Amino acid sequence: MERRMISACFVGDALECLAARGIDPAAVLARAGLSAPVTGSVSAEQYGALWTAAAQALDDEFFGLGARPMRCGSFTLLCHALMGAPTLERALGRALRFLRVVLDDPIGRLDVADGLASIVLNDKGAARSAFAYRTYWIIVHGITCWLVGRRIPLRHVDFRCGPPEHGADYRLFFGAPVRFHAPESRLAFDATFLTLPAARSERALRDFLRGAPANILVRYRHDAGLAARVKTRLRHMSAPSWPTFEDLARQLRLPASTLRRRLADEGQTYRDIKDELRRMKAQELLQHSRRPVGEIAAELGFSEPSAFHRAFRKWTAQSPGAYRRAGGGD
Image 1 (cartoon, rainbow, N blue to C red):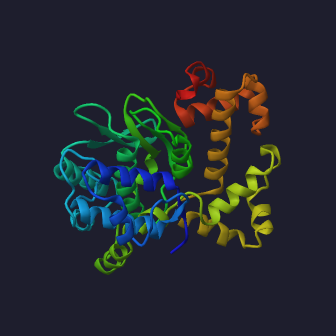
Image 2: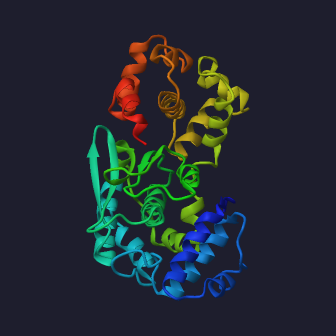
């Protein structure tokens, strides 16, 4: 299993859930092989052990954050319920229905519009914490990535609630633009992934469950693998000087066919990676600078502003000017 570190702030969020229900956090930390206070990052395996220990203490795999407890064993039953779904879209539908029955609230639904698929969470009352929405999305996103055998890159993540003190850690965790105080809590990805086959064997499921929940934090993370190496390389270069696909393969000392296949295994293409980096840089510059749109377009490698306008509308369903006037959605 690839090693990934989880911010101590998320450990703190989990411990607060325990303390709010009269359970000694230190005792649960000890059962997870950790000791208080936790001041630094922990591994995904350690956080997974904490999640399991907290679930056993609460008899709730959702940290007590739903209208009803997600009793121990629910995650396993959820995974079994998805077996045999022909596509990711059908599997997501089953997962959201299952979680609605188990949790009652929040209520998840799948929205598809403008080329994006979104897992939208609605609350019957006041907004929940960012930690509650994050936990829901970790469960659904982690399972569905496993089902289709590749990482599903996220386009943006919206939270109905206000930002926690460690909001920057949320942006780092999801690897996508994050907005707080949004009208709805929404996790969005490209709708093309919905048609992927969701074929996994019972044996593969047993292997998956043996590694849960740590593996849903690790296996399809945004900051690991070949795609992450490519992104890191491109971030240190200006967009107009990015290499062609063939030149990139030579720089990585890989045959072009191998590079293409390995990126596909991670749910990525070279074009996807370049578009993601351009989009994120464009959103950052539009939100935090007053530079002219034409200048931003040139910096991002577009030959003319009109091409940038078309691309930005495809990415966000907004024009650059409308995005800037709205304050970047934050």
